[in-house]
Image (tube, rainbow, N blue to C red; front, side, top):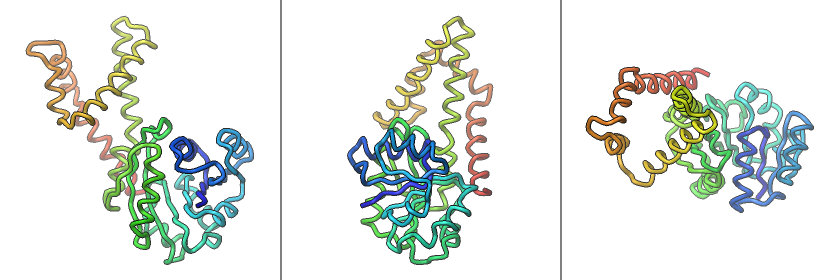
Amino acid sequence: MKIGFIGLGNMATAMIGGMLQKGIAKPEDIIGSSKTETTAEKVKTKFNINTTTDNTAVAEQADILFLAVKPIFFPEVIAEIKDAVKADTLIVSIAAGRNLQYLKDAFGRPELKLIRCMPNTPALVLEGCTGVCIGENVTEEETEQVLSLLRSFGIASVVPERLMDVVVGVSGSSPAYVFMFIEAMADGGVKAGMPRSQALGFAAQTVLGSAKLLLESGKHPGELKDMVCSPGGTTICGVQALEEAGLRGAVMKAIEACVERSKNM
């Protein structure tokens, strides 16, 4: 099985790294294309895979083809490769705002097997979260094949297409919001006298540990929050300050804005 990537940016290289590290694929099984020779050579050196600047060459060889370019480049890339893709190739798009009907219309080949997914940047450290939407021509066996690849760098779950824009908001874009929260925590520590590097380390580890506790305990986040809040203690005073500043509402508005943008791209 040959796995192809059109686009070799951060997300594609994270995915390639996960597949190789988990033994899901071998270097000789992967081929990728990039816009520049510099990027192609850099990725080839890092992973020992075959790379090129010829998108058509990748499309012709791939059994599973990941479209890993920015959404604005989809029209030109698809126009370039649509006649080169094999009829039984699984085409996996990782672009926001490009639904299955868009892909079907752009390729103009109703027999093609199309999958839409949205990973996020924690895939870079094999802790990604990917929402997956399956096209009508894709079999259960093919679905599991793609999920296996996506799970090599985190978790992956199938969702109906009507929720894919929500996936963008809740997981695709939300690492940025989490980084803002960590930065703000560190700023608070610096204001109180802690060196920045130490404050960032404390804040980041606390977010990491809290997320792990939530996932492994299966408890509601509200219950876990209450476990930290002693009567009349320091934590409940901080919680009150966050509530008064509108933390919950601000986060919900951020997700809503992101979802709406994804719907209208």
